[in-house]
Image (tube, rainbow, N blue to C red):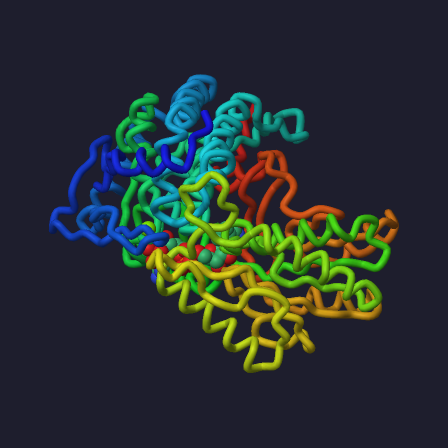
Amino acid sequence: MSRTHAEWKQLATMLHIESRLFIDGHYTHASDGRTFECLNPATNTKLTDVGWAGEAEVDAAVAAARQAFESGTWSALPPLKRGRILKRFAALIREHVDELALLETLDMGKPIGDSTTVDVPGAAYCVEWYAEAIDKVGGEVAPVDPKLVGLVTREAIGVVAAVVPWNFPILMASWKFGPALAAGNAVIVKPSEKSPLTAIRLAGLAKQAGIPDGIFQVLPGAGDVGRALALHNGVDCIAFTGSTAVGKLIAGYAAQSNLKRVWLELGGKSPNIILEDCADLAKAARTAAGAIYYNMGEMCTAGSRVLVQRSIKERFLAEFSKAARQYFPGDPLDPATSMGAIVDKIQFDKVLSYIDQGQNEGAGLICGGRATLADTHGYFIEPTAFDCPRPDMTTCREEIFGPVLSVITFDKVEEAIRIANDTEYGLAAAVWTANVSTAHQVSRRLRAGTVWVNCYDEGGDMNLPFGGFKQSGNGRDKSLHALEKYTELKSTLIKL
Ligand code: NAP
Ligand code: MG
């Protein structure tokens, strides 16, 4: 049901916010009573105090997960039955779409129109997709010596910790726990301290759906909780989405402890290449604006570098400036808002300092460039774009994770490919051209986990693997390939 701005504001005042940890089937306070403040970045007011898991809670959750996993209450269920319970979980997420969307919007500042149509339904769809898939994937019979039978099977890995970021809190969590649960594992979710509320609420829904105690647990807290999980000898696999810097630490923690499996979905600085034979420049410009301003630019796949061919640059920029205006920030609770608040003061200051740096290094401001809506006390920044004379400027190289685009001009396609690949990242890329040969030739040479042709951020369905080349990570979320992360391969040889 679509609601008005006034209705969402009213609902927000009546919302019950669960803020405790969820361990072994129960909501609980941290044993030392420690909490952290959870703020609404659109108003800079406190929503609640959230329980902060300490070492005792990490140990308790890992022990409960191990016990639940080994008991077989989940891992030994026929896949069809696990799938049915997960489908109930997905249905419950859908039934609670307004509540979950409101929690997400209040907690991290994204527009309610997006939380209700993208984030929460996307999480339900992900859980449902793996629920439906899991009884359809089997093993292999290897072509061995006829005196033997060689079976190749996949087994759940055990205790999986999922450490997730704040930009798409419920969605990024579901991309981990969806396949991990379907494969039969016990999962511990560590949400970001900037946006813990939907993960906490999901735990209660998981229990209601029939997921056994100890199989789905949530440990809110800061980076220390993620670190404790990554260092824990009782955790078999850590699935992480976040920054490349923290991803490297996680890999180190695994190496220092039990060599747990490490899967990393990290940052990006994705190039969006507009060639002069692009068939619809206005559409390319509108899409380029969405690619950087959707979700306040707080997207790992943000099209944060537009590479535009010189002959069409002026026309492109005129169309782009028009499109950027559609993203002017507003109250995240207003269904008409297309851009909300930056997640917190730290990120807000970081984005503004990148904007300063762009200007100091000589980039020309195409639009935006300032904080706005100061009377709200929230953290709003105008959709901003720079015309960058050189591709080695700071705003062209570093992941800003905010609504700041760098436009780089090139002459020859070869030059565009070189600039596009000249980055430590390799998450996504796009190319706009009307020539099918050029589309294939360029996309083949782009070093990125996803390449879009004449579109950006398409492919919201679960069928395509998602992840990065180079320092954008390893392994893939989504699709059947994600199941590979949460299972071990076993070869069984039977002598006849
Ligand atoms: P982050 O700072 O790396 O944090 C990610 C998670 O790790 C949070 O839960 C965080 O907890 C936790 N953490 C922080 N320090 C830790 C440590 N030393 N050990 C273990 N865990 C630790 O990233 P973020 O700022 O939340 O998210 C933005 C980043 O995520 C961007 O780089 C973006 O590109 C990337 N991202 C990638 C994808 C993808 O699929 N490739 C998707 C979305 C986002 P606290 O927040 O509580 O400190
Ligand atoms: Mg918050």
